[in-house]
Every structure is written in C-alpha cells, then in structure tokens.
Length: 107
Image (cartoon, rainbow, N blue to C red; front, side, top):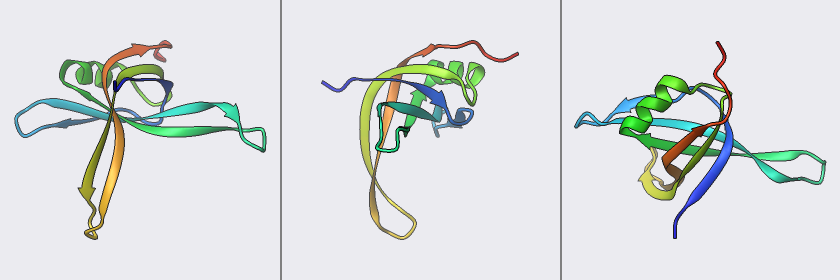
C-alpha cells in the first residue's frame, strides 16, 4: 500500500506547467513540521515536493498561495534522473489526488 497524508504550509505559490499534450500540472513545496522537538527543543521541518494534475492542479493554482495551510492525500513517488553533471540522482515526491484547504485565503 502506498498512501501518504500530509498537513503543512506551502513555501511558495504553486508553479504551473503544461505537458506537451496540454495537461496541466502544478508543483509546490509543503513545509511539514515534525511531531517531536530536537535536542535544542525546536521542531524540525521537512520540505516535501507535491505534484497535482489536471483539474486538481487548476484548483490549487487558482486558490492556493504561499503560507496557506493545506492537507494532501496521495502516493509517494520516487524517480531517478540524471543531473546537469551526468550524476544519477533520485527524487521523492508526493503525487496528490485529494487536497483540503485548512485555512481561509487572505483577502
């Protein structure tokens, strides 16, 4: 089973792109605070890449922005790619299929 639920705040506005066949995709980064404090008493934050497609992407682009509190449900995807120096890298990201806005947009 591959199911991920995350709650956090967006670090910037969603980034819109179009695939060569015209599908809308939005990429964004979610700052998710850990449940426990470190040795200094501070909570660490994970920055997780989120990808949404088509209608859901259009909704996120229209209504979400930097700082918004949001919940995503989706699946973890790990992909390999070659960077500009020819080094093989891996990237982990969440492909979201559901989103819930947890605060109200600023006017």
